[in-house]
Image (cartoon, rainbow, N blue to C red; front, side, top):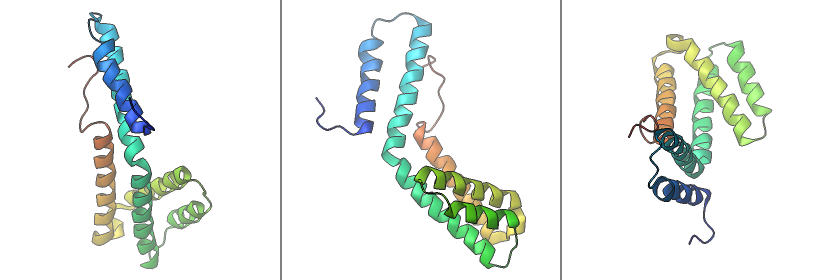
Length: 147
């Protein structure tokens, strides 16, 4: 029995029950695939609930740092400047993350015109995001019902 469980503990408990009790003796491949899909989604949610806020805050800080370096190096981009102003008007962590994601996308669009150092930092941020997303889905994609 879980006492004061975290969200991830609840989700992991549900996925365990689904993967053992619910699937035991179930011979319907369609139902098995549906259960596997639900287990995959809940497992991803468990990982996200443990790490998401921390990742978002760190990523936002890193993106803003690169964007501010870009602006302070006398690069001009009305889109980046506007996106930085828009960022400041957001209050929730989720909105700030969405706004920072937009800034990262705009920086990525500038590509090599950023200069080697900033382009490398932008690329690292994009790789970091992909690593987090791969971690959330368990390091790889597995089609439900095919294991």
